[in-house]
Each structure stands twice: as C-alpha cells, then as structure tokens.
Image (cartoon, rainbow, N blue to C red; front, side, top):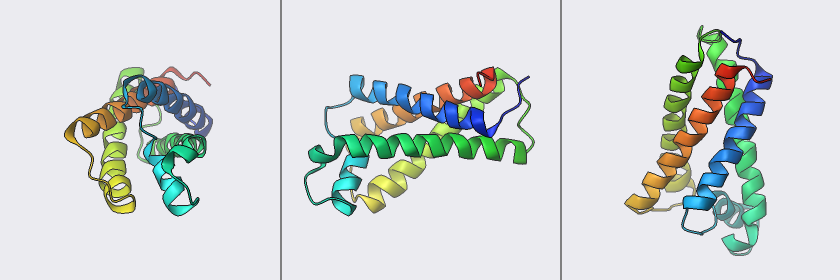
Length: 143
C-alpha cells in the first residue's frame, strides 16, 4: 500500500497527460486539440491551428490540476492508502468523469461543438488512458 500525496497527484497528472497526448497525436485526426480552439475563441484572435502549442500547454495544466484534485480527494474520502489495482480502477472511473465533464461541458457548452461519434469514442479512449496512467502512478508511489 502506498500513500497518495499531492506530489504524486501532480507528477501523475503530468505524466498521464503526456501519455494521453501521445495517444491523441498517434490516433487523432490531426485537427488541433479542443484547447487550441478554446484559446483561439476566448484568448487569441486567429484560427485554432495558430494556437496548438498554447492549447497543449493549457491541456498540460488541466491534466496537472486534475491529478492534484484526485490526490487531494482520495484521502478526504478515505481512499489514500489502497492498493495499485484499486487505484487503477479509481483512475479509470476518474477518466470517465473527466471525459463526461470535458465532453458535456467544455466541448458542448464552452466550445459549442457537436463531435461525431468516432471523435467522442476517441475522446473517451484518451481520457481512459489518462485515468489508467494516473491511477497506476498513484498506486505505484513513484514519487
């Protein structure tokens, strides 16, 4: 059993986001990430393609914060000292929660997108990858 800490959550969130991004780049449709669209719509004045790097930085920040949030919530609900398998399972569930929040709120409300079914499936897969990696890092106590 490994104790879940804020540092584990931050590092786990960072690494999980990097792994998720690799999957996005390998399996995605070569379009700019939704965070680039967010950046172009609310911060910049150009097309999303012009904001891929700021969008990726924003996505990295989201992943870092999401990892920290999970690491703070787990001890608060009595799940800070559980095994690797349990934390990977929690990570998967957390990936689903993040997907629902990202798809329902960010993509539909904030960005006013209506993604195709295939895009939604890929989006779910990428968030599951994030959850598995985050849960694995938290459970392995790598930090």
